[in-house]
Length: 601
Image (cartoon, one colour):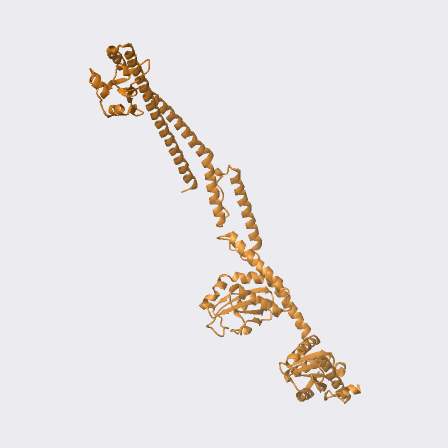
């Protein structure tokens, strides 16, 4: 039931009850007034009769009272008139000519109590009849001394004057008053109904329409408006204008944000915008964190943790794929990755999401097919496709990701600039750390690694072998055979070193034909043995120059950290002294550092 209908029923019912109460109260008042008027007329008539009888007594003409009584009885409204003698009077003078005994209990009650009794009968629409019984008491005044004639005491009841009267004039008066009152009430009722309908209840239509409109907007229907026929009120027009402005703002915000974040405004655009802005704020805060990361590894770790927190999935891995070189690299793995992504990731190659819940999309690269996983690709730029791989042993754990893969897209879309920045920084760092000619580390990397070795040495005391080497008379290669042959010689040296050493060892091209090697966990004897093996391998290699070939040798100097010195940079300097000693002795020689070299220097 509408609010207007409820209020209308309540108001009209209240008015009707009020007017019925007024009408009933008016009728009751008229009835009481009629009864009191009839009683007043009866009392007045009884007093006249009493005064007339008293006058007959005083004048001594009681024998003529019948004439007086007949005249009174013949009055228009008089229905009946009679007299009742008391027991004492009847005992003294007899019952009288008209058997003046008590007619009923009222007469008897008045005789006994000496109090008048009066009652009215008849309604508003009937003739009013008054029954009145008035006591006549004995007096002993100078004007009227009843005791002189009657054997009674002063104040005794001598008799009762009883009558019945009819008052027809009150009925006509009641009819007129009731009609007038009814007409006035009906006019007032009609006026109030008209005023309520035209001036009051119209606001409830507006309030009801405004309420419906507000509820519709709250539930997401921004097209809701108050009907035109109810918009003649300023507040209703203002609400429509407000909703119109609000809808325009929401649509504008949605259009501007839709290129950044996913907004599904079909059901509730306000909630969709609120959720989207919340995600956008989270991404913005995360971007500030990402920009403080020193290198790409830190950035990748933070990105993985961000998605782990978003989807409540512990195992998150990140894969980078270069479409140009078709190289796949696992840039972050939370645990040991369960797929052979490096041999080619289908999600990165096809650009489509891989979901283990779909039998036709099971990844052939997955090593343990019983695991549940979703791999979401995103194109960062023409040279980089990012894949977020989430794995769980519980199937339902990935439902949140299935419904919200757009979170991955919008997050990576916002972070793509930072990712590209870190990737470029990593590439530049690699260029600074890797010598493009030999494929060995550069001096920059050597400085970083020596710093780390010093820190590790304080905790572990693991020794490092230090070797420095260069080619005997390298300048003649460039002079005689040209720079291309010289460059090829450098590449051969680099490859020889890599083939002769372990992955834990650090091989650096310091400058020109000068190389430095840091041997992990290596004592002095082992350092010398490795140096001799490298020197021997290089001495047996035949270098090509045009159609002919030639053989070159190298000189090597060795030292041990921290045995030779607690400063690893100083150990490198000691290895250089040993290398120079090998040169002074004719080259093609491996020399270990000894303190006597410092003395000779």
